[in-house]
Amino acid sequence: IERKVSLLDYGAGNVRSLRNAIKFLGFEVVDIISPGDIEKANAIIFPGVGNFGQAMQSLESKGFMEPLKAFVNANRPFFGICIGMQALFEGSDESLEDKGVGIIPGRISKFDASVGIRVPHIGWNGYSPVKESMANEGILPTDKVYFVHSFCALPTIENLSWILSVTDYGPQRYISMVQRGNVLGCQFHPEKSGHVGLRILSNFLSRTGIMEAGAPAVPVTSLQQLESFPRTALGKRIVACLDVRSNDHGDLVVTKGDQYDVRETVESGTGNTSRGNVRNLGKPVALCRRYYENGADEVAFLNITSFRSGVISDMPMLQVLEQSSENVFVPLTVGGGIRGYTDDTGVTYSALDVAARYFRAGADKVSIGSDAVTAAEEYYISGGMKTGSTCIEQISSHYGAQAVVVSVDPKRMYVSDPSKAPVGKTVMALREKSAQREEECGPQGERYCWWAVTVKGGREIRDLDAVQLVKASEALGAGEIMVNCIDMDGQCRGFDVPLLKAMQAAVTIPVIASSGAGTVEHFSEVFRETDVHAALAAGIFHREEVKLSDVKAHLKSEKIPCR
Image (cartoon, rainbow, N blue to C red; front, side, top):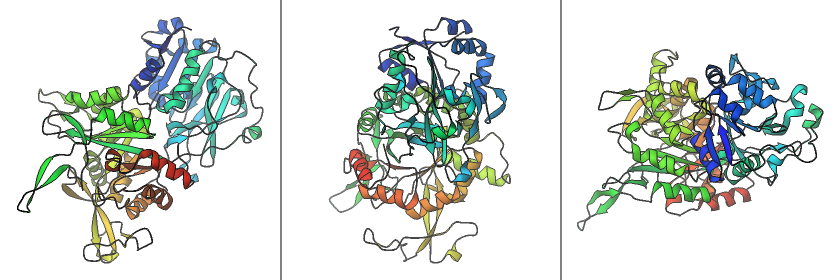
């Protein structure tokens, strides 16, 4: 076996993780630099994250398009991932003026949110093979892989012979894998799909040039036949969150706040208290690896260190990402300092520059907090006009909406009656007493509240409410919302369900529940009552008060789909 594979990197998002996965499997990566390198390649992997149009324009501008067409048409070993698979089609509705490679008949179209699904499709779903292939050797029918995309390839009579597997998202069945001979493509990310994805990559790499060996695969012959294969379901995600900051000795540690305060409370002999050292719950790289091995579906790093010199020069945090991505093959999200700034030498960096540096270090998504509030305020001041200059727009237009998470830090504002809230704020009733919980109410017995948006780690309250923020964030191009709650943070009483219901009703993009988990039951409760796509926890996992594996076992016992 030739243990080299050529990588066609057109400047996509996180390609480091794919490089690491290939190296992890014992293969060497050779970068394609010039058109001539395509002809010389033994096998090509074409990864893609982001925008179809930018990918195609990059292929054309570098002179790669025609040599790539010749390579694929010659049935030479090729594996297209995500945009890399979509590129094989004739074109995409994401960028009407840009043509695809055109090997497979059909166009790429956007998921239809009007049928009750949240777009982008983010998370762990299955895929249903429709013919035999060496690519799927060793994969079980119950295995799930990681998808993150807003556009998909739909089956047609003309492309039936290419279809290797299909996946269902809501009522829509789309093509999740294609294969003809030695040419393979998948919509999901094998490098982010844990051991299942590594097996699929290994199957391709170890069978380079012989993917079609053995009995020929029998393709489906009708769209009706395609509907007969088992349906798949999107699983709920469990996200482990690592709040990372420098301690008092300058070392990066994982910490956890109590209502956003990350310092220990020290009691004196006189009964007075003072703030002590930053809580140290472990080293970020080691904890990330532990959570991956324990079944975390994603890991989020939130860099809560005060940025004095900016992200570009924040080498310790970048090294945490780089080292984590060497052995952790699930999605990594990073937040903190995703903004434009000018450094001490007078060099100016845009939010896109900062995000690009995080992506090159191994991040798959960036989480934007305070700067998203600023962007939303500008959006409303302008009467709902998009300028293209906000951090959300810059990153989303280049890397796709699925790469941008907006992290909301709201604080409850209690009112005795909805009419008492300021005009334009979304008011929700708090939950009544049940067998599982006490009645929720404010300090004066208030039964209603709205949620004020905060910035600077919860230290400053703005005029926007949480619903206004997430609506503007979606309009500006965010692909996912992470909903924290200052009142619930570190309290272990459960997620803020009324808040999450308000968020779910306000947007059509996926929502992640954060803040408040204290038991395994809190996870099943939030999934049942709000239908959020993911739930995040930090301190209870770090201190092992609740084990991540126990959460997964509980969800399965409750018949809630998960990986």
